[in-house]
Length: 287
Image (cartoon, rainbow, N blue to C red; front, side, top):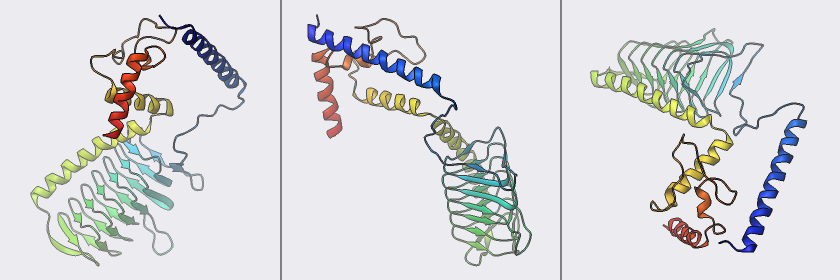
């Protein structure tokens, strides 16, 4: 049996909750322009002179703080990662299927000193901090972290540009070659093991991109639920009341607060168990 004071508090809290919900509904009905607040207010896609990016409906992932600007085409399963910039303002950028543009990488074009687009093939990996400036990358090649491929350069298929290398303007990297240095020079042929690793990494990146896309699409309500579920899973005693499995309709009601679940950890509805829960929570935080 709960005390009279506890019943009063429960009744008051339920009444306050209903009033709040009513006010919230009234406010929504009075809105002239509906607005959904975004967790990340960055603008991912920007038009230039009326030309907007063309993004495949099957593009794997464009990070919330990446910038895709102007005449840019993103292919199927392509991904543009955090802080990357793809800018097709004075010429076009074409990015093929299953190609990844790494964190903080920059892809640009040229019009003033030469007239070059950036054309990037399928299954290409562009590493973090790399720069592709008005160049062509053929299928299944790798531009490693912080490397640069500059105006008019062409990197043929199955080639690797080493980390930090600079491929100077107009250079042609033949198929299946490994280049390094500044200015970049051919070092050796790409091995069969490296080719297999390149293909494997490309698939791994695609899988990771889909996971990031799923997480970044969550709204505040879902993130709050995830946080509560994580806290509950790490602190709840397995022998104690358990929440209903995902997708299963909850039944029953306790004191007007809903079905069994987190409410049983409340010191108001179950003082003894609530105290035990708080002690376990404090112990977990200390660890």
